[in-house]
Image 1 (cartoon, rainbow, N blue to C red):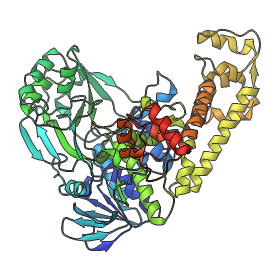
Image 2: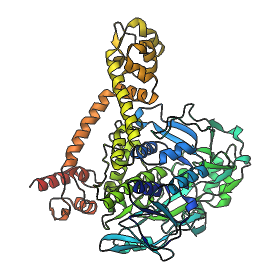
Image 3: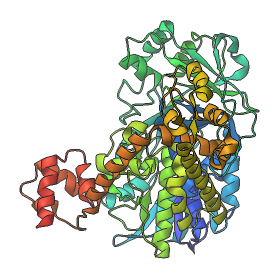
Image 4: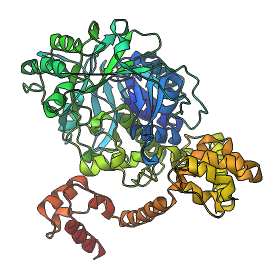
Length: 627
């Protein structure tokens, strides 16, 4: 560890969480000299809440981060203890990989990769002030009074800005258990004209594994053949361990309600809004009073730890209430609570104040990434960190900005949502937020994004060579499915067995595969794969085989979405000049003027996606631009 001193660096990254990891690695790998500032180097990559990566839509983000050359998927693969692909009973657009990870191992692995990166230097301390000259960032002043000048500064402050932790009637400054909050930065930004707000997040109790009766719970095993996050990993070698499911009941709820008069949520001590889609247990039983039970996941935090994470029981109720309620849940009658749950309230900056590059609109060279933009979740933070790091480096190196559009990636959907729609509660990515989600599947993130990562210098030549070989196998496989025919005698027994109508004359494998109940692997066996080299290649490449099956079955839907993308790109190509004065257009609605002037969209397409801007407003804007 290097002590702080007056210095000059091209990029400063503030915060060693998931956003800071991706931002600092990307900028350093693109050739910039980078300082990563963290209050405690041992906390780099620390998983503040659930030690899990991925999940619905979040898994898509991790795959995209990996395809662009980021690190989260590789760390998750290296340290995972339980892997599952979620939503497999539904369509492939919503299949999402998820891993449970060894908490300490994940942090150590992240730290190892950071400390081993060329061009990247880690400093311990906190940011006290930002040097701003005119409207451009020039450096940072740190807690010991030292100064480092820079061309770009990325704030990845997580939940630490003016943070307060709450458990019942007890409050204390801090952004995470045992770690202090960061003060002074919010005030400096407000002085510079930024708007700020307050949000809340929470975490559940941690329990001692030795005191849980798992015989009274439902065991949940990982996938038999776990799928890696990283396209650069062929398989997962780690031993998987099971997780467990239990439920609350009416007695649990009654005890929890008895603590509402001491709840910081209900007594008004917490002002910030919490995450709608990951509510606290008290919020659940208050909002869904008709429900007599709620599902709880008991998730081990690692191979060699006694700690169990109680997923689904986030709370800020008093410690004594938490303990009494826990012991009414099956399997937890004699449980010992290692640490109670608590809530964290912190500053964020409404994200209409950043560009799609995540550079702030008020201060050039200043970037926001992660929970400072109002998001929740490790994956959302990491994706923003990667984009901010790429753009900070691009700005420093004189390269063009890097922006992902809604039709290119979930990362593009998330950033576009944040800027155009804003958020007054912690934003979480969902597959339902992506209008082109069948095109933006997790399985094809490499095809969508890996060449972009290569152009940035974050993906190597060998990875691109392997991608090209895989895509060649996919195309040969599709052609072979179209050209290979099977007779009724060859295939009808299989069709009958899977509940599909028999055929009366020969059909191509592609025609048969379009049937919902028909799977590609049995067809390959029936067809005699040696007769078609393209089919033989699919038999040995599970990832290419899955892509061929999806893209054959959903060919019509994919073509329809591709046409919608063409229409989207037309509206995106109608640019709005920088500095356009929306408030001078008299025919705009008052709300339209206010929202357009606040967000300052760069295209007609973006203007149309701003919450509060009507189709009539868009028409007025288009006519004005055409004139």
